[in-house]
Amino acid sequence: MTPSNDKTPTTKPVQRTVFDLILFDDVKLTKTVTLPSKPASVENALEACNHDTSAFLEIFYDGLCERALEAAKQDISDFKIVAEDGTATEVYTGTPVSEEKGVAINAAILGLAKAMGYSKDLSKEQKRALKEQAVQFMRSNPAMLASIQG
Image 1 (spheres, rainbow, N blue to C red):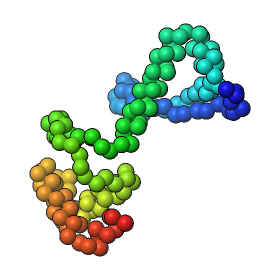
Image 2: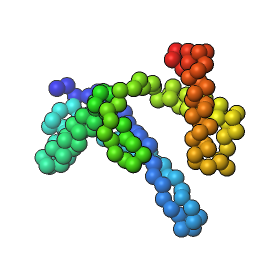
Image 3: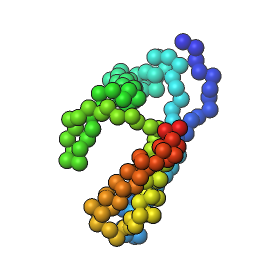
Image 4: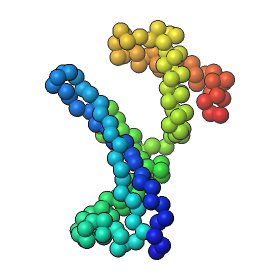
């Protein structure tokens, strides 16, 4: 294998939330971490692990698992619908949209529900009913359906 010519360190932000005893509130923290460079060979990878083959195999296995999970997320087949009680039995056969489009549709539903009287002060059942009315309105309106599907 040829060594990597890219010597520029890659950075990535990490975040966590802590409860601060002085503020007596949650504080969201962030910092930038310099990631290790990509090894150009197995020998370089072992060197990065201080020649600890157990550590190398653990890291390698973690990477394989992450790849398998990402591939599974991309393949919509065999996913099951999770019910409110946490059980997952029914296989999903719907038509998914992109995350961005899903956010836009949910915003439109909430906007319509607010126009129908939805507010934070209502009970959970009342909110659900108003959102369902908004969904039914959108489904019965050809122009709205076209904008959602297009």
